[in-house]
Length: 595
Ligand code: ARG
Image (cartoon, rainbow, N blue to C red):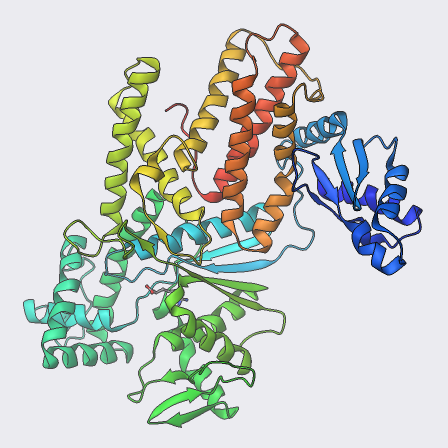
């Protein structure tokens, strides 16, 4: 369906041209004086300069042409030359009825030019614990992917595992110290390696931090780890087999973790998967004259004339020939182009990685790894801080593990839900249901708390605010959905149904306000996709929930005596529920049946 704002602009534009003015002056926006009107057009002010006329004269002429137009209940010119507009209630009701008839998309059309876009998010490092920084990447990336899918694009989520760095050498070295007898360390061994890994995920979780700590204190140990990393990368068999074990165990643990967050990847590719592409890529960069040696390392210059700050060359290979973070990112681009020919790639990573992405993107473009119409976009996100404004830590000051954070929120939510059920309905809820509900609501609390901020900004993780049932929080939205579900259930339990009537024109200002919010749905989705901005869906959700709750508090729905009016209310509630549910789904969480 054409966006409501565009329909209104069309009408006003026609009035401008009919009065002899250029079409571009007809642009309509939401009113910034909601006490006076719903929409406004300031075009007469701009046109006045061009047509050497007084703004109010033009506004008057346009208003006269709009008089009697069934779209508006009011189209009036006010000094010095504004056009104030109110939509006709029946026009709005018809728009909503059409939305409702479109049972799956509610007036938000799929794009006519579907694109293939790879979203590179999550970015966990194999064998290192997931920390809260990875949480943001997962939450925002998942939402961007879902928004794109809803708009009809082909979004491919790739976890892009960090699995090819020093951490592998560290684990191998530590394991060698602890259990030198393992067959993986016997260089003369030519047989088949065991299928079972020689460690569990719990051991692995302990081995990495121990090794990392020791490498900081012991130079020789660090050298050994670097050498092991090099040997692994150069194909030492035993190390390769250990690597496979580490990968398998880590990945199944990671999958579980992400599933708990309602985060699902289409591809589980990692840095190690693109090893086979590096040699050819590097050779070509050299042959084409882009890559040259500098201080022993192989680099590509990526400076540009317009730079206002120093952009150092992109390092392709270290002096010992080892690959780096940028090497695997570049080779990944090669692989993705070959495999998917995407129209775009979107990367999510901490905003402190900005320089890395500037270098990689420029290098990829300069050396011709991309098609001219493939775009690269980096979304750098801010830090999640504690109440002290510093990066979120555990109570004793350590790095907060993701799993611990999630269980803390789950526990807090469980308390709240049990309280709420006791207070509101004096109903005891089974422990099982309480636990499941707590998990669902807790996820909404974390995700909404995160997504409602612009991605690039730091934000404060505030347990009380995030888990509150009131105010701008995930639980508040879920509460609104649950409230609607319960009204609909009560209504249907009376044996009534909403019939096939269209939605009636609003009976009150609050109802009209709710309708106006609902009608914005397609426009909001479109903008959120174009700007990769889930926070725009969040603020829409909050406005919509507020509009609904105000309407609900002022309107007797269940006791409405006029059956047709009641049916229309119920249809409006049903539409509100659908829109709220689609929006939270693209944000990556869902609502329980009750809470
Ligand atoms: N593994 C990286 C980290 O933990 C994030 C990866 C981001 N994606 C990428 N293609 N570089 O910081």
